[in-house]
Image (cartoon, rainbow, N blue to C red; front, side):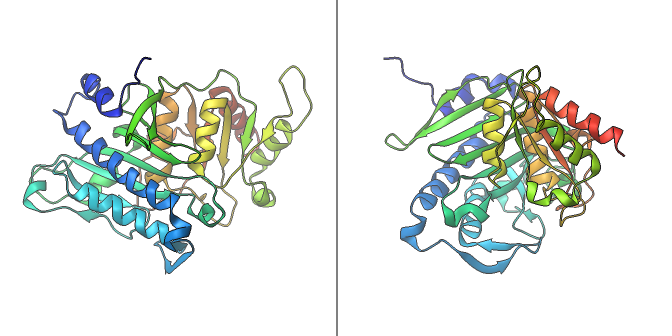
Length: 335
């Protein structure tokens, strides 16, 4: 039987795709892989370990933190801090960015932005959650502490991005700008193995993912698009199927493999949208484009947006190219 290639082997074989680094990408992804294993184990034992439920705190966005939110944040920060390739981290769970200024980090060239546990509101009911990460080269001078501008780069500057989905199986999906590949964790061996090579969105999709409970607050263009996807049209394969879990990683992963569109527009309780540009939208947009899809805020390419604050929120339209373009058409026609 042919043995699947491991994540470590794959990174080494494709090191040429990361032209800036000499083993640094391997070390960075190794840290993320290790932290993901720890978080995966904690999630699988959450009920037994009494770490379900709320932590009793709010994050910077005013959202209740789950105990696993705090644990995942601590695990990823602690694991990444132990490597010398990173000089700073920004997390959805922290108000400000962290500077790594120990001696081992003085020549570090990279920063990491992350959502340590996406979809954590689903934890207590055992629905799929995930970790989202994004890697940039710093723009400030090496040897000096990182500054805010290092983190406020447009998404098109990302050198790597990905997510870990903790579901029926645990899968790490990432890109360095040369396609998207997925690796499934084998708990018996303790390694990630290539299981989803060269992932691409199907040419056509039939799934739409949106929180229709917010329909009354949506822009007119989104309302009309939703009604359009629900109409009967055999030629277009409509109506489409509605699938929404409240976990971005889960909805994105399904739509990328099966074909679909994910929408989180303005007009909800968050007037600028709910998803964070730096921690969720940019990494997912990078993956989307590398998988042949399209990702915009309804009008503008997500990766071209210039962030102005660490926790900035933006509208998010992501998925099959033709589906996103149809949604954009409705947005343009109903401004």
